[in-house]
Image 1: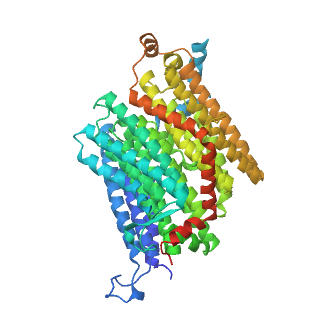
Image 2: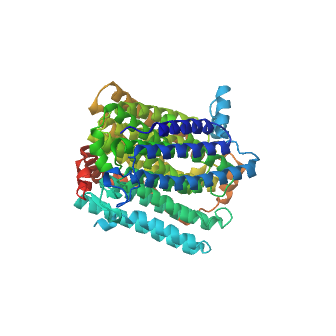
Image 3: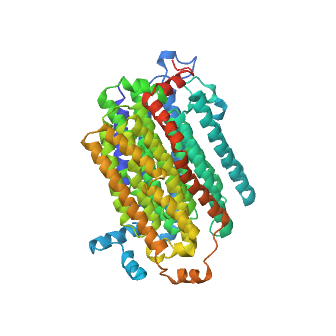
Length: 134
Length: 506
C-alpha cells in the first residue's frame, strides 16, 4: 500500500512552513511554527495507517476497516500539543510583560565569553586569583 | 509479583493529584510528596530484587491483549534505573523542602512545586518502564511538561529567558520523536518494542537506517549529545538549585536510556555505531573545553555534564558486553554525582552568596564541611581512584581497548584527556572558591562572623547523596555483575522479547 499523495504534500508543506517559522526569533512565530509542525506530524501518522471504512464491528467488514490506532495516537498528540501551546502562549505573554517584547534573548554569559575570546583573554577570574593567593 | 510494575508510575501521579488539592497546606503537601517518593523508592528496590530473581516482569495494562494494548516492562536495566532515579529524586525532594523551610514562603511559594515534581518523577518512571514506543513518547512528554513548569517556576526574567530556549528546543525534539514514531508505525505496523525488534530486522537497510537516525536525533537533543547540546548550559543554571540538580542528574539520562534501549533492541548492529563513537568523542572534548572557559560554577558543571554524556555514548557505540555494561554503570554513577555536585553548589550559593568564581573564595577554611562535600564528588567526577567514576571510566577504556581499531583507540585517548581536563576544571573551582583567601567583603564578613547557617535538611540530604556516591565504590563488584547481566540481556534481545511474547504476542 502506498500513501495518499495529498497527505504527503500536506505533510511536506506543513513541515516546511513550520521549520521556517521555528527559525524566527519572535516567540509567537515560533509557537505558530510548533503548531504547524505538530499538525504535520499528525497527518504523517494518519498517512501511515491503513485506509478504509469506520473501524466499528458490524458496520464495516473486517478487511475494509481503517486502522484505528493512528487515530488514537493523533488524539493523544493533539491533546499534548494543546497543553504545550497554552504553556508557550503564557511564556510569551510573561516575556512580553517583563521585557516588553517576546523575542528570544541571547544568553548573557555566552556573549561575555565571546567578547573575551575576541579580546583574546582567558576567563577573567584568573587575574584575581594570582593576587588573592600571593 | 507483576503487581509491582505499574506502581512507580501510579504512586507519584496519585501523589501529584493529592498535593494539588492540598495547595493551602504546605506541611501536608511535603508529607504527601515525601511519602510518595519514599514508597516509589521502596517499590523500585523490591522490583529490582524481583527482576533479578524471577527475570523480566511484564504487565499488559488494562488486560488488553499484548500487541493491541500497552505493556509495561521491567527488566534489570529499567529496574536499576528506577532504583537510582528514585533515590536521587527523594534526596533532592528533602533538599528542596529544607530550602523552602529556610527561605520562608517568598522565594519558593509555589504550591505548584510539589505536584510538578511528582509528575516529573512519574514521567521518568513511565519512560523507564514503557515497552511501547508511543508510551515512551508519552513518558517523555509527561516529564517535559513538568520540567517546563519547574524551570520557569517563579517567572523571573532570567528564568523566562532560559526557559524559552529550553521549551522550544524540547518541543522540537518531541516533534522529531513523534515523527519517528509515525514513521516506525508506517514501516512496521506496530509500536510494541518487542514486536518491533522482530519486524524491523526484516526491513530494507536504508529504511532502517533512516528510522534509526530520526529517533537518534530526537533522543540526542534530550541527552545533549554534542552538536545538539548547546541548549543545556544556557537553560539549566538559572533554575532553582534542586531543580537544576534533578534535571542534570535525570533528564539527560532518560534520553540516554532511550538511546540504549533503541540501539540494542530495535537496531542492533546498525551502521550508526561508528557515528555514535565519533559523536561521543566530540561530546567529551567540546563539552570539557567549554567547561574550562566558564567563570561560573553552575555553568561549568553544566558543561561537564554535557562532556560526560560522551562517556556513556562511547560504551553504547562499542556495543559489546563490557562497553554497554560500563555505560550502564556510568549512568548510575553520573546520575548520583552530577546531582550531588549541583546540590553542593546550591549550598555554596547560600553560604558564599554567589556562584561566580571571581566572587567566591576561602570556603574550605570557612566551612570545612562544605569543602569535603564538594571535594569528594568532584574527585569522583574526575575519576580519581578509588571512586566509582574511576571504575566506570576504567571499564569503558578496557572495553574500547579490547575492541581495537583506530577509532576506538582515539576514543580511549579522548576519554583519558577528558578525564584529565575534568580534573583541571574541578581543581580550578576548588582553588578559586575553596582554597584561596576570600575576595569579597561578604566572604570576609563571613570569616569573622562564621557565615550564614546552612539548613540541616539541605546539608543532610547532600551528605546522603555524597555517601551514596562513595558507596557505589563499595558495591562496585555486585553492581558491575548486575550491569553485566543487564548488558548481556540487552545485547541478546531474546530475554526481553520472550518475556513480552510470553504475555501473548502472536
